[in-house]
Amino acid sequence: MKKLKLILVVIAAFVCLNVVFAGNPANKDYTKNLADNMVNDLSKDINLTDSQKIVIQTIAKKYETKLRSVNNQANSNSKKVLNKQVVVEFRTRLDSVLTKEQIEILKAKRIERLKSAINNNQTKN
Image (cartoon, rainbow, N blue to C red; front, side):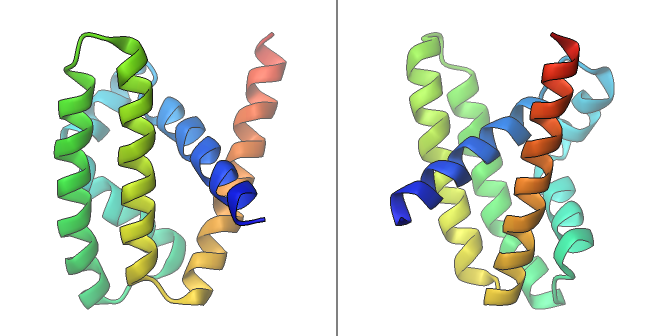
């Protein structure tokens, strides 16, 4: 069951990343300050405390640095593997800062976004 949850989290994260990093010019502005935007979005979704915002900002900046490093690599196969590792590491660190209630709310929102992304993708095809 834990493996299934982890797989769903990774899939949801990649769908969300694909939506965030799509070729839309507005998304380029979002990625300029990825860590700040991630904290702001999380705060809207799960009402972070001020202390959580500070800790998550640090985690998000490390995530942003690692993600940019991975995306600068030439080999697309290694990019996929490394991206998965970075996302899983980020999720694990983020979950350590959140309350159980916040984690559940965030999971529900991820599933909602995943379903929406899948539906949008199916309507395009």
